Amino acid sequence: MQIAVLLYDRFTTLDAVGPYELLGRLPGAETVFVGKERGPVYGDQGSLALVAEKTLAEVTNPDIVLVPGGPGDQDAMADEEILAWLRTVDAGTTWTTSVCTGSLLLGAAGLLQGRRATSHWLAYEELATLGAEPTGERVVFDGKYVTAAGVSSGIDMALHLLGRIGGDELAQSVQLLTEYDPQPPYDAGSPDKAPAHLVEQWRDTAALPA
Amino acid sequence: MQIAVLLYDRFTTLDAVGPYELLGRLPGAETVFVGKERGPVYGDQGSLALVAEKTLAEVTNPDIVLVPGGPGDQDAMADEEILAWLRTVDAGTTWTTSVCTGSLLLGAAGLLQGRRATSHWLAYEELATLGAEPTGERVVFDGKYVTAAGVSSGIDMALHLLGRIGGDELAQSVQLLTEYDPQPPYDAGSPDKAPAHLVEQWRDTAALPA
Image (cartoon, rainbow over all chains, first blue to last red):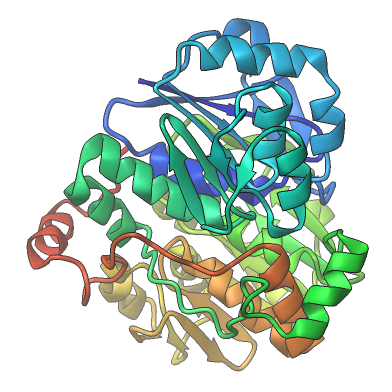
């Protein structure tokens, strides 16, 4: 089984690394980080680069594709080489997945037409313009298309996928070994839970502090 | 404010990227990934490299140091260059932090003598041999020393630190924007909660599936 993680300029690093950390531990899985060119691809904070080991042309038939989000999403959505690659690999995947605004790339590639999907909470409207039906759920399965909400939600998505692919005990083992027993000191992780004035503030600015 | 993240061969990538994603958004903070040499440093799964932008010698006075864990911990604990660097930077830090078995490196450098600290649940005994007093808490503050439990716990640690450094509203904003509203589909994230036979199995093998 091959898992391909797409990297593009100004992606959000945790979108990719969160699910990778868990999903990459599927027995027998090979994960490959893929970019337009081989070499370092910088995330949205500018201080961290992940290395693309293969070019798009070198990875054509993964079983799972994972598309992270990030402020670079708009440029990536306008990049026909990336969109064509997504369509090509999607034709052969068992699971086509995204985290955060990675779903906008899937939508721009035409892969979410009429499908239930999610994205970062600030991107629901844009997701709808791409033909998807946005939901507020944290992880959304619609056939083989699996989309997760903002940034950290990819970890939950990975556990769901581990369970479906490898069974409950594998998923529980990986959860135990990564000690994924979340205890956030605040309860502000969704627009329904965060203080209303912060939600409004970020609706207005729509950008992460960097 | 400078945040230095140490990279070494076969570190666990989420240990570093989880807290980086949140903590790096501190207004005015500069994050630098540091290694023995500049260039790609491969994580424990072998398929993902993060780029060290600076060498140890180039980063001598960070305000925060973050040490990830991983199966490479034993080699790193035997590397006097790394231990000497940890002692040097610790002399000037505001916060000295670790995730997972990163605390073993801090312990090996002599920085946790008599301090309350934590680590991956499989590493409590080894942590004690290094002079620390292991606790089962997810995030442990002892003065400026902040240690987190296994892998994913670094995200919780980052929220605690954001609150202490930048205030509750900053921490809540970052939690909202990273949608850190965890909804794991299983409740197996600690040895107290996971099925007992899985806990025993991993106590015996003490290694992540890879």
